[in-house]
Length: 207
DNA sequence: CACCAGGTTGACC
DNA sequence: GGTCAACATGGT
Image (cartoon, rainbow, N blue to C red):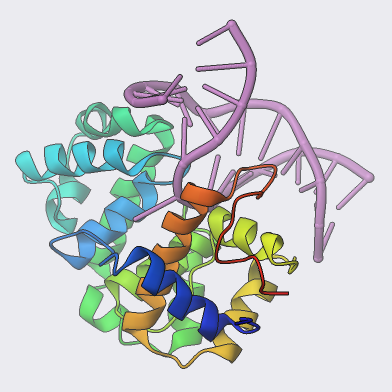
């Protein structure tokens, strides 16, 4: 039983870990907020911040754009980098006030991605997370865990190279892209250390 | 106490 | 093109 391609690895991960059902959020804008807040931060901290923002009615573009910057900082402090994250969140909220989500998210993929990347605080991973989980469109998200897992199976590359691999070997299925990304994160958390990956049960036998 | 977390940026080569 | 410190709190 050798898995040579990314589709087989997906099946194995799903079998091993079960459906992850990412991304936990009630609205697309909450996904956007979470995508910024989770940068270099544990999701449990993000959950608290989002919950608190919602409690103050600030999980909405218009309200967040008009909110007191210091209040936002206070609410997202638990996520670290709170000064820049608060500032960026407020700017992004204003962006979606000026450019409604239903319009922006319907743009051609190339334009949509460039537009997301033009926002302060939105790099490749955050842009692709927003596209996949908020806009519900097929973009494969590469994160540190994906890079780690791929290295475990002997494949190294930069963000765009790895993304290209996934996107050319898999059908452009939004639901599957979401699930696969989530599975990789859970898998790598469990088995792939930052420096070594010596206990990867599914990966053994891949090469 | 050291290390890490679902990264991004601007400076520099 | 690529590398790297800075950004900051909270958990193990």
